[in-house]
Length: 373
Image (cartoon, rainbow, N blue to C red; front, top):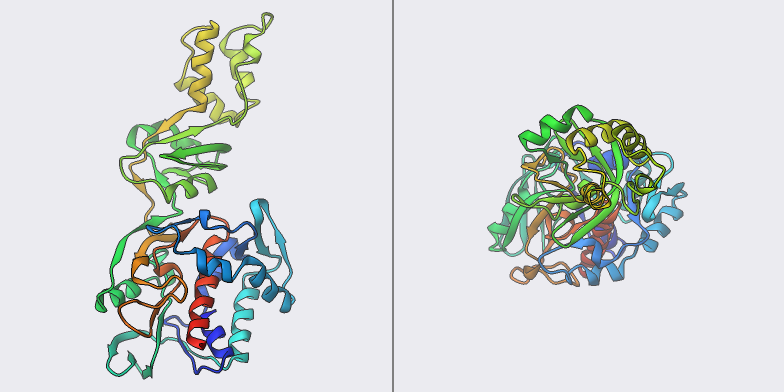
């Protein structure tokens, strides 16, 4: 996006891609259909040490702007829940669109261009294994550490430190969480069971699907909260949002016994989870007070994860180049003129649902416009 915007304005642009093809991470996103933006994108959908940093770029390049580009290239798309937009056919449509825009902007793309060294003497000099590139400006759009099998490296962070630019501690985000040993023994055999929940950590809450795995918890709700979770934190999970599952048991003519409770809870939770829950949380009695406590247990399931699945399963990397080091309008370094950082390498991390793509487009567009002017 940055290369396209700069190229459209007559700048001579070389796009160095260390892989053998561009957009490999785009191609695997959204189950191969690329959740390329979100209609409800707001600054509140992003984490950063400076929550105001993303506002300028997001305001000047909106989901509607990217959607206009998608429409220009006649790419069919559809909206899923919560404003998420996906390609009808394949994520290849987005990669092809970006390649064509690069072609029209006379951007030169160099594949297998693995950067070995960057020097800063009267401009920037980037050395790869087969060539040297020189330019008055250098844009670092290397992404984070997530999904190393797709080629993720720490190059962007190393370059920042090389130029004396602070990097905030990185961690896996939008990532499944791991059960402690005792919870693993209780729930691992329920792998594949999912439920609509509200999961909370500290002051953050998300209502989406939870998925039990053979190692812990996943699903959209868990991926969302994982960006806020840290070692030592507990999760509080409401397994039955807006439902009072014990209400039926309080009727005078309803039998107050385990079979009735089991049938009632199976109307609220997946059957296997309902049965396991009752086995692990037997009633302390059948009085209204006891039922109140039983009800509360279902709405306040407390879990203490012991870790995450790591960068191998993380969709994005939280942390990165400190936003205090960059101009919020241009993405240019405040210390090194002509040096820009955009996208995931920066300490701006979006929620699940197309927000990280929108940050990529918006931050790239901001830097591209700055280069053009």
